[in-house]
Amino acid sequence: MTRGAAGPTLVLVIAVGVLVATGVTLLLERSLTRILLGVILLGNGVNLLILLGGRSGAAPLVGSAPSAAMSDALPQAMVLTAVVITFGLTAFLLAVAYRSWYLTGDDEVQDDLEDRQIVRLAERNEVSTADLGGEGPDNDPEQVDPEPALRRLRRRAEDQ
Image: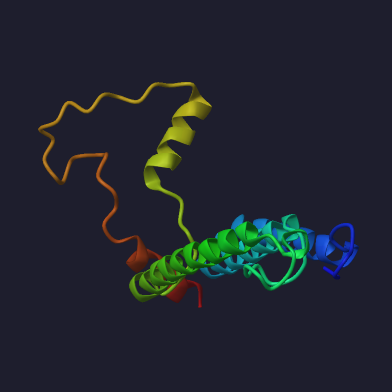
């Protein structure tokens, strides 16, 4: 923003729109790397939007300028807090993506097996059976498949 301007410039507003739109688009992908980039872009777009909400002016130090000419310190403090939160979320997502890559060799988010079962039951308009317990670990249909990564790696080897 320029000093003495009535509001944010059109370039900054377009930059906010592009950052937020690109961030949301990347968040909807299935790759954890793209989700991570989407969180970073969305966070930067929101931070810029918050900064555009404050007025520009002199540094907000008492006695350096008249109070009407000082910039608003609240948006700056909010952006500083948002930067720290975005950094923490980015570090967490980076750890999740690395762990997924280490375990499966892929950073794609897989469908949950129980979600697939619910979709199949909904398509047939059926109700799932109640868990009566006592099936044992080998017979329990509710147990998640313990080795989806190995099957995917075997499938890739067969395709090649």
